[in-house]
Amino acid sequence: MATEVIPLPKSEITESIIDSEQTTCCVVGGGPGGMMLALLLARKGVPVTLLEAHKDFDRDFRGDTIHPSVLEILDEIGLAEPLHKLRHVKVFGPTLRAANTSFNPIDFRRLKTKFPYIMLIPQTKFLEFLAGEASKYPEFRLKMTANVESLIEENGCVRGVRYLSTDGWHEVRATLTVGADGRFSKVRHLAGFEPIKTSPPMDILWFRLPHLPEDPQEDSGRVMGGFGNGRVLVVFDRFDYWQVGYVFPKGTYQQVRAAGLEALRNSIVAIEPHFAHHVASLTDWHQCSLLSVESSRCPLWYRPGVLLIGDAAHVMSPVGGVGINYAVQDAVVAANLLASPLKAGRLQVSDLARVQRQREWPTRIIQAVQSFVQKRLIATVLRSQNTMTIPGSVRVLFSIPVLRDIPARLIAFGVRRVHVEQQATTS
Ligand SMILES: Cc1cc2nc3c(=O)[nH]c(=O)nc-3n(C[C@H](O)[C@H](O)[C@H](O)COP(=O)(O)OP(=O)(O)OC[C@H]3O[C@@H](n4cnc5c(N)ncnc54)[C@H](O)[C@@H]3O)c2cc1C
Image 1: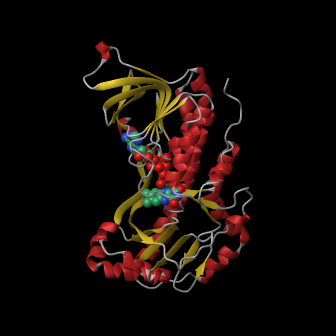
Image 2: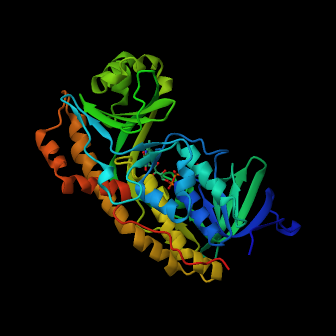
Image 3: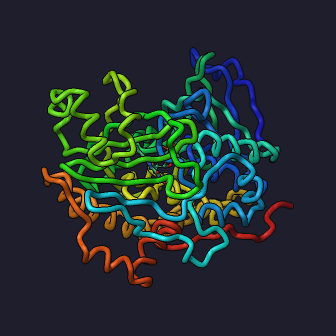
């Protein structure tokens, strides 16, 4: 069955709804999770409509990391090679910098995988790439500037959504609605799911610093972290500029502002001396955006007709940069388990429950690790007002290959590797 747009009969038109579309799966949110799910379902012959609120994929910075597990998944559907043709860099291990030295705690090259690195590619390009691939399937429809505002519910079952676009209201009726609409998920709220917090909030100031001729040109070490004087700095190379996250104790933003831009510039250079010239470009607070990030998870990810995946089901902290990985893995598991029943028109609530069962425990484990890092390690750094060094014991621990491979594996694959089910479901 192909997705079709049916003009509403005159008698059924509520004042402002322009048209009603019938599909099998309506995915809300074109982030990594929603886009991957839509692609995989369309690939298996399931009619799917993806609704994305923005007019394009150029969104605020939310990470550019494509982990080995995602590259393996893309390889399984023949897309790793074309993705590598896009402009990217490979990171074989992030560099950690402190007053006494810098070192590379993790080396992905030791992992048993065809892709022993994190690929850094602007998320806009990654999402455009997935959308382009999904568009090759007639079952896939993409609606941009489609802001979902309400759910269509009948007899306790979600039957689709209503969304507002530039020309007014539309509706999509579907057997299954998937909320892949991120940390502030509207679908989660409308469906009545209550998330529970899993780690305390963290304040981060995000800004860009320019690339300068003296910057390193090599492909590795393009993700850096540094700390000292109660601050943590996280740096990503985005080809044309550096994306910087400046972490400070929760609730002290007014103090950071009151200290002034000169103090901010000095504090950045104290952690990362390489930026001595770059920080001159930071001349106005409007160049910075303040983000309060926390993590949470929903006890229940589904009810009849609706399922949550990715950040909508479990908001991931940026610690370790694993959120994209997890959203994509949720999508793969959902597609593996739901494509056949959706296609056969026999989707049960128990199918949705299986998705949560398979994905909940890996999520809980990784969130526990993130929470530990945030509460114990980052909080200790943020409390210290002195120059900090990397303790010798930490260096020793990370020099033991078996121990050093544990965080590398967690970051690269999550708690559990997932694979695209290869059975032919297209008929
Ligand atoms: C500052 C920051 C830095 C991060 N860095 C990293 C990193 O380096 N690596 C990493 O792996 N993770 C990182 N993360 C986490 C990562 O961004 C998320 O875990 C990941 O994006 C989740 O993917 P998703 O598809 O579930 O949701 P999202 O990527 O949030 O996508 C949700 C989509 O839904 C759309 N949407 C929202 N509401 C509606 C609506 N009502 N109607 C229609 N569409 C809607 C949004 O526009 C968006 O496109 C970071 C997070 C933050 C906050």
